Length: 393
Length: 138
Image (cartoon, rainbow over all chains, first blue to last red; front, side, top):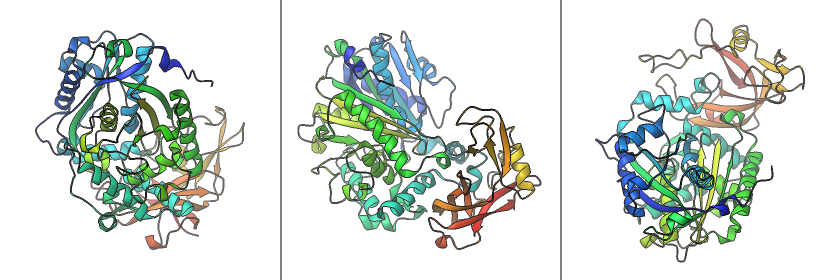
């Protein structure tokens, strides 16, 4: 298909507000409470009234599974946006794709101020039955789940294959976890801040070989929100807008046993990334900071290859030697990511990109950051979302 | 799944669905059955109602040789329910017919499993009706 690479330019969409509640172990709060608190913070950050919102996009809750999530939230929060509503469920690629959905709605003229919100009490609210239901959800109920596939196990299958084909080492995966922890130490709203070493990662319990406990993301409570507005509306808001410049999405499978071979999987990701960069009209070298979905360390490594920041198979050496740390050539997840800040399906990858592009990331600021890429990964490498943001149109 | 609350400690037993009934019947007879499209000739796994390659609804069931090799694997050190006894191997196996199947590699030390290892099917009885295909070193 010949994509309309200019559609985002016809009625530009911008990020104008972000909000995030306390993250980590936050008992005594419901999923909708986290949604509402985050939404309130984002509205205040944008400097608007909740009545200004005329679109709402929510994700899903692992704890309170409602059939019509967006309207459930809107009623609880006391808004009745006219007239763009949607609940999205593409797993970890939801957050980044909320931006694309919002941009499309703005382009179509369906709304001009859209609230995107997600929250959950996953750490303190999810029962063991709920956790089992989630694990089941990730695998084919008859032909995968009975073999005891864990979510980390699904990623481990491709980590193992990556090591086999390219000689990738556990130490290289560990370097990713170490980098995320270093960044989290500089992030006030991070759950895990104590420093870790490569040895700590390798000595942490093996969950599903070759992935250790510290190769796996956190489970946390918390809420996050961001607001997307048309450029016209954004002009009168509190902050300098952050522009949505390029978007792309890809999927090759749902169940990991149906995934294509490793190289083909990465090449599909690469083709999608090419489209996002072409739409944004920038090159890889123009990216100052990358917010890469990091449910597991291998996800970051393969995403960097898929995005084209290094060649396929060279992710292992790319993440070594502090190259993805602050001060390195491509700082990744300066907030600490899912591995160390908090897990809310990538909402905070978006928020951190906004802080970086506004120049508000404090000790984590990448000097002069003008372009960021944000990714999401849903299922078991099942759905990739790629969004390129910039602080100029 | 037949798994109900109170049974969460057990290994889950797959429940037949319309698309998979023949597959599980095959397993009970010690046969690993695949679908083959009568129109485009492609093998199909997992079982479904139409060919994912050409949309044909004319599909046949054919017996796999049950032989294949490990595309990749992971040694799981914990399981989703207490019924699983770690460490166990979850593997993706490329069957000779060209389709990929998830399974456990059993009958050897998990540390002996390697990518490219030749394996063959065996069946493990989970209930009166359900025999789950697993793989052993060939």
